[in-house]
Amino acid sequence: MALAATEIDQMLPVKDAAELIAVKPQTLDKWRMNGNPNAPAFVRIGRNIRYKASTLRAWMAGQQDRHSNA
Image 1 (spheres, rainbow, N blue to C red):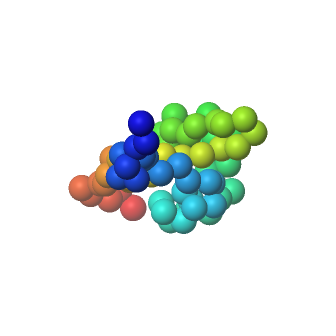
Image 2: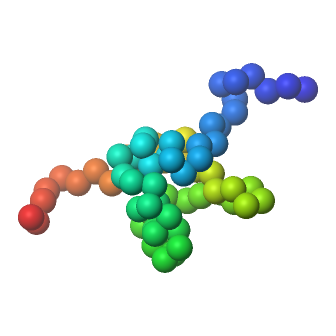
């Protein structure tokens, strides 16, 4: 049975994922390599790193802040 396009969670390469969350691809790479616990979760498919679009949207929603200490 084939899944409809709306049922498939889009898997983004690092470059596209970084663009979606407004950081440099190198930032995502650094977070991943350092095991940053606050970074968005990723999926490894063979040698390729992918990020689920829904995971990135949820991660961004969790980054909202009500005040700034800056």
